Image (tube, rainbow, N blue to C red; front, top):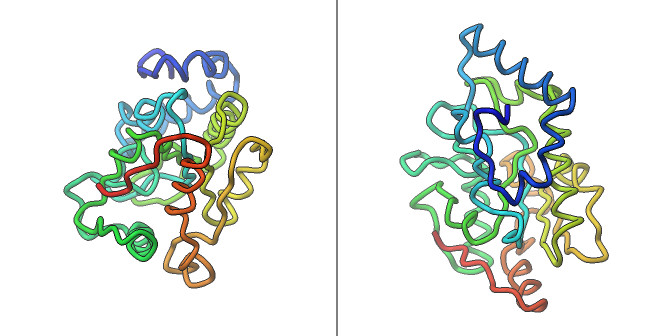
Length: 226
């Protein structure tokens, strides 16, 4: 996999050994076979590591965890909850994220689904799975990506200081069990999905809470407006 994917040096220094492990080789073979069978893998391979390449390790201030890429062709580009600029209507979970952002900070981002500006400020928008089959949500679960992204969370927890981890839903919260809470802040709530947002996402104020914490530890706040 690392032979044809460019990965930011700050991450590669910590992940190079991971690429040589049997589970990654198995994952690579799975993806090769899926392509051979004519299946459409999203996003395109040059964007599988977009979250890491957009947010170098030394710049990580916030981590938002998602589950897997959008399975709709033309949506996913390697950042959780984000979709390419031309995507309309907005994905449903992102609509709810934006509603809470407007309630929290008075910011209206409803004109775009593109969260690349967040990533470039230090918000690591990390999905647990970095690929998906078009039209089949969660199709690549259990193939190895989960272990790889667990390692990424571990790297951030160990090597960074005073990072805000935003864990929406039980899946993200389970994935965040290894985070060192003595030096990082965790913000938890239910998932912003329409199926669950009413059970505690509304009013959780993750954006203002994140910025308050960053300010308290001497870091620049995130400009959430895109």
